[in-house]
Image (cartoon, rainbow, N blue to C red):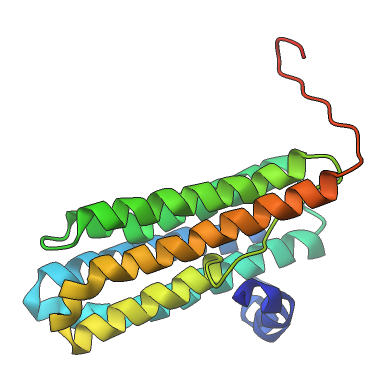
Length: 212
């Protein structure tokens, strides 16, 4: 749901880019923030003397969301939007989520099964989002039930802070991941319904590189 305030968010953070930042720089800084988030999670959970790293996770996630908003904004401002840029943006977004949160798989004591379900649902929701663009009358679908990319950053930032102050809540983490997975399932359903609604009454054609 936070995605729908992206326009306002972009306007409020535009000053960060000044005149020095290019879309590629924003993308690079976004990748850096992904790596920092992953390291924050890993070292915060695995090294007692670095436990405070968990408090930096929300900062790194906010930086990631900021750079993600700026790269698209700057691409439009500098008229550099392209097919290659969109492919890069979509790929970096999804892979970034997997790196940020997938690192938790290597944290001892972290519930593996529910985490894998959560990561799979992230991929699935983003797949249907992108798929909407290839359907008749369609476009990139962003509808979600509190589980868009900014929402996920918020949920996982809260996750890091709560476990910093209350490590005993680790026993409930599997339920937390399953809850987030359910939100993603609902988002998938919402996106599928919207795709079908937009395609209703329009001609559908399917082609592959070998033909129809």
